[in-house]
Image (cartoon, rainbow, N blue to C red; front, side, top):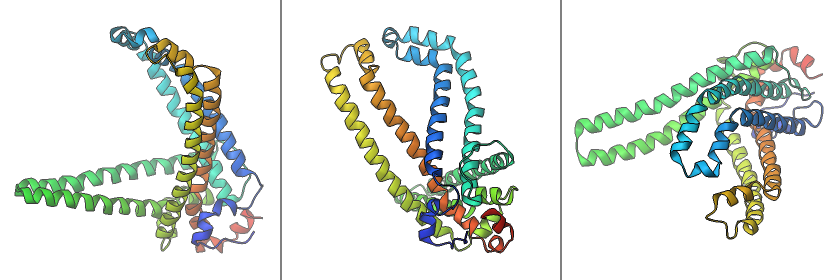
Length: 312
């Protein structure tokens, strides 16, 4: 398979130019949706006492009884959170591993919990620390500006401070996006080299960061339109389903709950929810394409004999 050149067109459509067995995106999205629903069902079962109380018409009108019942279920709720955290983490590791192997090794869809996934977990933790640092940075900038304004103490300086905060927020967001683009191939590099690679992403994205940012923006705009259309369909279907059954029961919580739980509401709502989850999974894979292309088009790797082994 010939190497892909890094350019804007290839970055946008990298998900279609990976090579490998066909049908990856459909399998990726469908499996993601099914397992997401399984996890949601587990979470619902673990948290059912809380949800049951929240939607109990008798307790809705009795805050004291609601508070007492919620207090008695704190232990089970905490257990649910403790169980769902590692499950959610494993879920992300499985799909991120499959996602990056497609781009870097042209593999078909498969889920596994192996070395790639554990290395990606480390990369994810580094990303978490970087995002916290960037998040704290903006507060430090604003605190510095407001500190200077407080020291000056005039109304004109307050207006100037507001303007500076706005300008700096925009500039900082652009900076944070640029930093994210510079390190964005870290996961792809880690899967490519079968070793944890984060700092190398800075070298790989030299001269490519703004192209990655631009492709992200275009992909986000496309997905926003797709999600908006899908949401519009969802809203029309739900309103059309609810209108006939909601007439005359606006002041009866029990009747409203029964109407919301009717098959005519649950079934179309469930189908549309699955569609949203499927699109979310597809978007996750597509959005990873530009950064993965930067790793794949790395000149120091493109001339490596390992690429022939990977794409043959």
